Length: 156
Image (cartoon, rainbow, N blue to C red; front, top):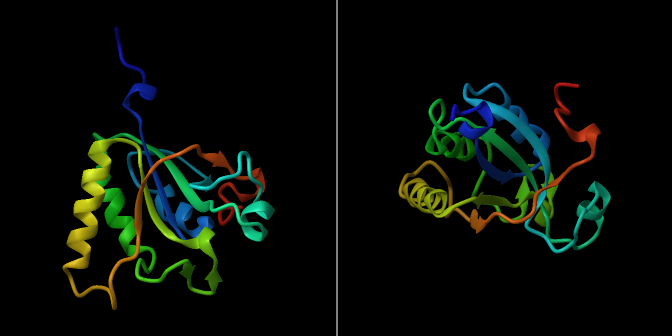
């Protein structure tokens, strides 16, 4: 039975501050089929942007990526992740403050978990950052797509 392009896609989910900039960093990477911004890691089902910003939902703003691992590896996606934000600040990126802006890798399987843990350890062993990395590496939970006006926001 022939494979279709959907069979080649894997998923990756990252939180690195405001999801608009994070999505923008991944959109032009060869091998990435799609990006979507949304919420993950919290307690409320079907949260809205207002819920995540103004209520204690425990969700993070995330970018959910579908990619072809034959074109771009999970390690390469993590390399981008470490470059686009400061993983040493707790619940903050630049002027954005709150748990929704935390640094997190949401892994989708054990292989991603091991790669993410190894990558974090390697990043901590460099002098690239001032301080220890506080990025949480957590099992992916339900992804709630953000409102349409947030999708590809910087492009719009």
